[in-house]
Image (tube, rainbow, N blue to C red):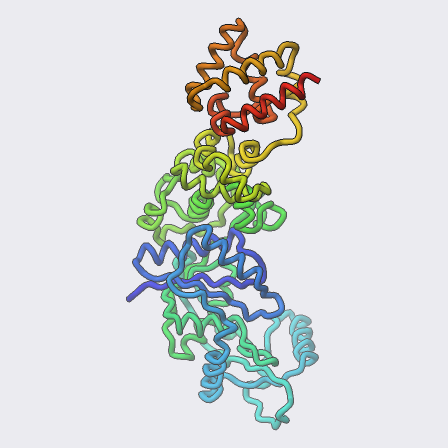
Length: 469
């Protein structure tokens, strides 16, 4: 049997961390088993589903490199299929039309709550044979078994049983003719051959209803795997107040996709004491029986640590490709980026000095575009009497260099410091302020190489003029 998993988000918002972990676990299991991974957009909630949310989900999946083998399928494009199955259930007496008004249902609910009963549909129309006019509104309900139990062995939670008497006849088609979530999911998973359903444990209560529907349709029941929730840094359920709520917000904040994926895989899954995994190791080692039952705590410091690790250890070209995205977010034009240093050169110079790509892009902006002002603290500390003379002499020495590389630049400036009988800091720091506008950057030779010969010399000349005043 070919293993087939799916990720089926509702596009009523962006892809959040919990959904991303579900997608990752589903993707990994399919890849581990040599099976297929399906992307399905569950957009039947027409009022809340939006195209920007769909676009963001797909963009997030691509950024995380969770490629799908089939899809994306859209539920709104499968309405004819749903109507066909509903007609079949009606014909076989496994579903029925319910004409109960909203007022009646509210009264039933109120009465049940007064009696301390669990609110549920009372089956009023289940065996009702009253005549109704063709234009009278109705919903269609699934005729749930009234006796016995529905049970399943969850890959994470173990054996789970529900009494059918606790379940009511749930709606499978609304009055406007649109099918409902619990119904569409079952038909989709059946049609698409899904063998394993990996999802959040907020869906556990939907599972018995769905299993009864699978059985009524004569469809195979998939294996279920319900993942425990993710908690925030403070131990509360992860929510908007915990900061980044969208996967793409992590990109905005300067995290690498490899770091986020590595972090997410350890939220509820383990392989010994290993913390850092390549994509190949994740696929090789991932199994559903290694998923933990308990909730996972989100730890931002650990994510930061992983991000720093990948910034230093991934090939600079890979990190540079992501840095390029951040440079453009700095408002730099395509031409400005092309005229500046290669992004991988910036990565090599800054990977040990920054914690995120956003920070790296901010610090590297000076190599691609001119700045309007100098850091006041840096000027106050490093631009002293005689600094302009040092800058002028350094400019002359650098202008005469036959080669523009870090070694040649460092040697020329060291020789100048020796000639002037001053410390290297009194040469390098004023130059650093002149070239970058700030007092902190990589080695002065590396800094000037990133800045380029023409831009470096022009900035030294500009600083001489500015600081003379």
